[in-house]
Structure formats: C-alpha cells, structure tokens
Amino acid sequence: MDCRQGVRRLDIHQQPQAGPLHRLDNILIFKKPEKPVYPDYLNRSLPLEVLYMQMAACAEVLLPIFLEEQKHQKRDNIIFRDREIEARIICDEVLSPVTRFEIAELSEAVARATQLLTENATSISRRYPCHGPAPPILSPNQEAAYFSHLSVELVDFKQAWSQGVPVVITDAQMETIGPDYFIKKFPQMRVDLEDCETGAHLSKRPTVAEFLQDFGRSIDPSKTWKLKDWPPTASFRSTFGDLFYAFMNGVPIPDMCRSDGIHNLAAHMPVGKGPKPDLGPKAYIAQGTKQDNDHSGSTVLHMDLTSAVNVMVWAADMAPGEPGFALWHIFSATSSNCLREFLVSDVGYAGVDDPIHSQTVCMTPSLLDQLFSSRAVRPYTIKQYAGDAVFIPAGCAHQVSNAADAIKIACDFVDVDNLAETQRLVSEFRLQRIATGNGDDVLQLYNTLWHAWCSLTEKESKVLSRAIRRRPSPAEPSASYTHASHDSTQDLLHAPPVGLDRSQVNSNNSEAHILKTGAPPGASSSPRPADPPNQTYVASAVSGEPSVWISSRGIRASCLAQNGPLMKRWRNGLQATSLANQKVVRHRVTAFELWLTKSVLTLGRVVIQVET
Image (tube, rainbow, N blue to C red; front, side, top):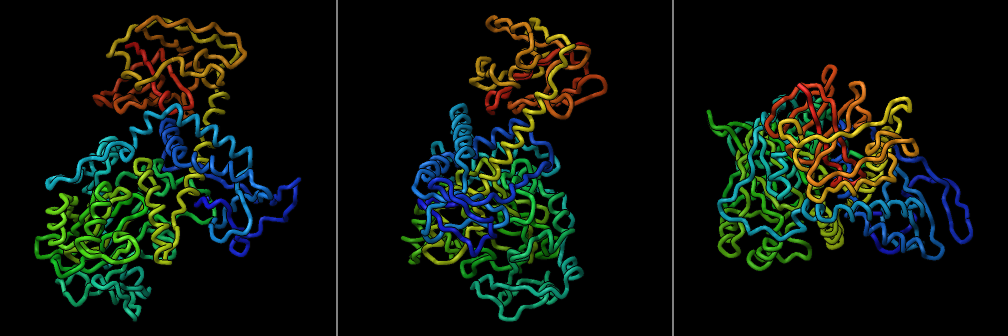
C-alpha cells in the first residue's frame, strides 16, 4: 500500500506463495497467510495519552489512503490478498486490480480514524508546525537548541523539536569507540571507501585495520576517504552486537531514538524475519577535510527521509589540547524551496532531478554568504564534538564537514512531530527515483504506519479489556460521590485540556461506564449527580483501594498537561510527584476521579484528594 495508482500487480515471483486461490461470486480470494505479531513490550510502558496521540497522527496520514482503497475495492474482478509479513509490497506494472485489505477491516479503520480526527481536529493542526503559518526565514543569529544529556527532560526537548529546530545534546553517556576498537574487533573485515571530494570509490577494498591505522594524523588533502552507512547491507545488530546495545543504551532521548522507543512509530513493526524499514544504526567513519571554498567536506548537501540523530563517539585532536569537531550546516525545512531556487538560478545546477536530493552540491563558505545576501536564508551552524548528539528534523537539508578524523553512529526514527515532513519527502524521493532510475523505497512509510496503527489498536484493545476485567466485585459497594472544594494544595492536577467536557465521556462505552459509576454496565448503581457550576466531585475510595481501575500496573494515572502529576504505588498509599514543582507528596490517597474516553484530548483530568 505504499503507492496509489489505481491497481497493483501481483508480485508472485518476489513474494512467498500465500496458498491456493478460490473464487467467491465474482471475487478472487487468496488463502490467508499468517497474521503479524506485534511487539508486546517497548523500551518502557506506553502511556495511554501517547498511544492516542500516535493513533491520531497515523489516522491523519492514512485516512485518505483508506478512503481511496474503499473505492478501489469496488472495482470489478478485484483480487483480495493479505499482506505477507515476510515480503515487501511493491507497485509496478498494471496487471490486475488487487487489494490487501479485508472489507470489514478497512471499514473499521475508516470509522476509527474518522472518529479520532473529528474529536481532535484542533489539536492535530496545532501539533504539526508545518500545517500552520510558515515561521520567518532564518535570521543570522538563530541557533540550534542545546541541552545536556545529564539534565534534559523530554518535555524540554519537545518544545524546540516540535518547532522544527535542530537540537544538540551534549555529554552523551556512551563508551568511547575509537579506531582501536574496530582494529581489534574487526581487523580483517574489508570495506568500501568513498572519496569525500569526488564521490569516487576506491577500487581496492582495504581492511578495517588498513583504513584506520593512520587515523588521528594531521589533515592530508590527498587522503579524504570515508566509510559511510557501515555496514551497508547487513544489520548493525548482527554485525556489531556489543556496539549496537551500547548505542541503544546510551543514546539521548531513548524514547524517540531507540528502535523500540515508545515515541518511535517504527517500533511497532511486526516481530520476526519480515522486512523492516532500514533506519540504522549505521557507522560513519571519515577522515578530516579542509573547510574552505575548494573542498566539499565530508558529507554533501542532502535530506534524510525521516528524522535522525547523529552521535560523535570519537574525534582526533586537531592540536594538543584542541579537540576535533564536525561542522554542520542545517537548513530549516521552510527554506528548502528558496535553497533549491538558489542552486538552480545562482549556482547553475542543470540536472533533471532535484538539486538537493542529487547529493552532488556542497555549500561552501562563499555560497553560504551569497545565499544569505540574495535570499536572506542562513542555516543553523553547529560544531559537534565527541559526546555530542545532533538531532536533525525530517525535511531539513544539511551537510557535514569533519575538521578532524572522526567516528559517528547515527540512526533514523519516525516521530509524530515531523511525520508530515516525512510524508512530503516520500513523494519527493519517489520523483527523484523516477528521474534518475536509481534508489529504492527503503522506508515504505505507509506500510510502516499501517503496522503502527494495527499495533496501537491492538494495545488499546488490551488496555480496555483489562479495565473491564478489573471492575469492582458485585459485593463491593458502588462508589459514592461527595463534594470537594478545589484547593490547589490538595488537587494535584491543573485544569483539564481546553475543550474538555464531562459530556464527552460516552456513557455507552463499557470502560467509561465503569469509570463514571464504579460498576460494570447493567449493574445497579446510583446515578452520578449533576455537577453544580465551578464545582469538582471526587469518587471516594473503598477500603483504601480505588473502586475503579486506572492502569494495568497498580494505581497509576497521568495527565496530558506537561505539569501534571505522575502517580505510582508507595507503601499502602500513593506517591504523587508534581512535575510543576518537583514536590513529592507522600500521603494516603482517599479519593480520586478519572475522566477517560478513547480520544487523546479527552483523556486528561485526575482529581486527587489527600489526607495528611
């Protein structure tokens, strides 16, 4: 389902046999292959609000495809075939109309996606900066956001990241991986080297030991070799197992960067041997180059299809006491068209393809000055030292020049904040492949998002089923409701999100019914009294335990508000941590209220009353 050209061909010669065909009325149906199995565990528990946020993001991209697919399914002689999890789905010649959705499956996905987008239309447009007014063109003094790995919080990172600003996190806690490590571990492994200046490949394939034996030398303009995207075809985990786990355990913002991070949509790909997006990690080992108008640097101007993080794990000293670095120029995604116009009209790029995606241009110091003087566009300029992680948002053109020999490890990830840019780049990269006849769709974005959608839907179903199983025993009394004044010292949550209303809780939903009444649907329970204006009601606890379920891991609640509390078990009560003032309140909780529906915006308010 990665492209929509009306019909698809059956790639029988490239895909495993799915079993015999049989015809039902005028529909040809394949025997179903094995269903995909989605990961049960990510790097940590997936908060429900994050789950719904990601579902809404996937819905925004996938709903137009779902609707188009429904039209496609109405064609005569349509062939229904399941998606084989051990093969990639490609689109090429037109032979027969094929769909890989079941009719009921697609109808359910359309209904759920429509519901999410209808409920959260305002929030979704606000979450994606590329959907709003374009920010002003970069000014000369605009800088990237800097944080220390020792103190950075995800909420602080997101404030800059969600605006499309590159982020640098210093002090990455990662083992020093220098030339000696690779020489010792992989001395006889042969590698393909590329000239940083010309892009030509070295005819002789040297060993790792031969390439790295003189790393750390002074810059020699006659030697500007680099080893990029290493290993080129094999997985990083299977080739460098110890290094893979060291990177995953030490990379900053692991929720986003790890292959199993809860904020990485690619983490939901099915487990097993099936093809997965090629997101790395990969190693980049390059010799230092001169940074002037006569040299091209280590990596020429280009864009990555997804967001990425690049960690420098080692750099040679440029002189005694002077650490080496890599010079980055990162352009805002909003300046891409201005940059293209400049490369064509001012620099004279004459290729038939995209001047940025061609990966043949280096913005030298003189060209950077000319770009600013003619179009008022200037990139973010970053000096990356050993231990620095550079985060590049999707859609940002960038180039790198190593001032000294350096080793870096990088990986890509699919994040909600830059998903719209990734979607736009999918179309651009497809046109680039058509223009040049080279390349491949290594991401398969829509297939990746479909699996994320299925995985998130499955996890949502499990959460709701556990909520029903944890309903109060019929022998227990129903929750009673008493009036409680709104005291900021006792109510540990701030105001609910904008637009939140009690009427948004669907009384027909089983879980919502339990949460409102403390009893399963159909059980006798006193109706909840109407709330007077500006009043707050809380549900009293029964025997020291809540009468309604909150989460699968004991008593836990979270709020969408960035300064809301997180709660977990503490002795015979709760430990409630207020993120607003970092104050830990250790009192026994005797009352609470949880508003919960299936949409991210209406999951938000937990009112806590404590007694000292």
